[in-house]
Amino acid sequence: MSDLPRVIQVVGDSGSGKTLVVERCIRRLRARGLLVAVVKHSHHSPDLEGKDTERFTAAGATVVLFASRTSFLAFSGPARPLVRLLPVDVVLVEGYSRRAFGGKRFRIRRPDEVTTVVGRVLKVAPRRPTVASAVLDGRRRPANSLWRLVLNLMAERHVREVRRP
Image (cartoon, rainbow, N blue to C red; front, side):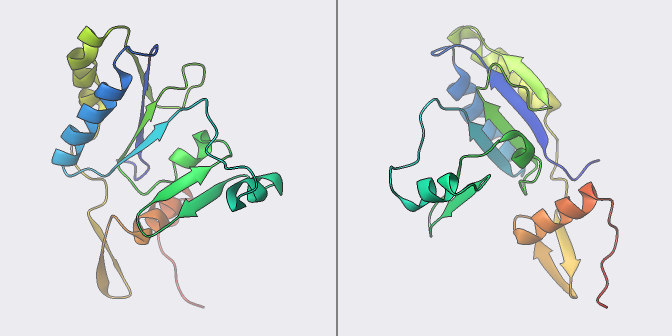
């Protein structure tokens, strides 16, 4: 089993039920103990004119991450390569009808298809967390931390062990 997150994309017209599908999938996947991230496509820019995030983007940053005590938000840059680096088990992508994210893709056409699409999504989602914990420096660390990101990056590069010089 890969330590990279499974990417599942839900596409459809406005009002078709995409958000409801993603919302129900989040609840069901969390009940399995999985860590879930969501990428929501929007036609609106979150940058505020003249604020730091816009200035960093204008300066050439590929991605600008905004973090506060209660929030974490990515501004600008291509979302597709970033989703594979998220320290989660599943990434649900809502929207991006004209762009594939390299995972399974489900189309919803009408709100009465929500239950059916949720079932299809859950069939391709992992059954259990990919990494429960890691032992680093002799201490067990939870998988939902910065260490999970490190482990995912190591797996992507096929690194099995890191030693101090």
